[in-house]
Length: 120
Image 1 (spheres, one colour):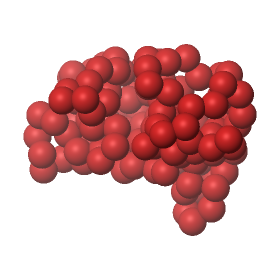
Image 2 (spheres, one colour):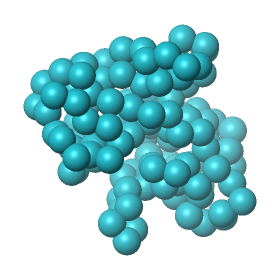
Image 3 (tube, one colour):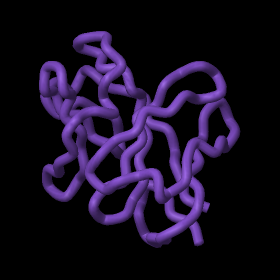
Image 4 (cartoon, helix red, strand yellow):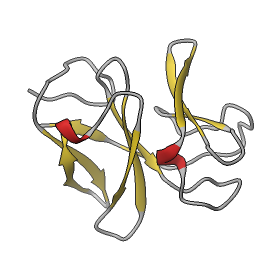
């Protein structure tokens, strides 16, 4: 059973993979994720991603670097939703980033990278 960032199918077990640099990479087990909390993962190319399991069972991966502070902390942010779309609020300066698009909800000119994620 597989789920993507659309969250259409929600498995209870499996492994989480993130697509970076053109390849799918296993980053953790689904059981390692807690809904509403983030986990920082290291991608094969050395970049960091913030991985989230939202309360609807969808897995999201965005860049872990907060573009406003420069700190690698987005995985420690608070999850919420706006108009049904999940976001993470940076723990440093509280800017909110859409987990689907990476766009900052407080300054549309700023984005973070989004990585496709799935459970297999």
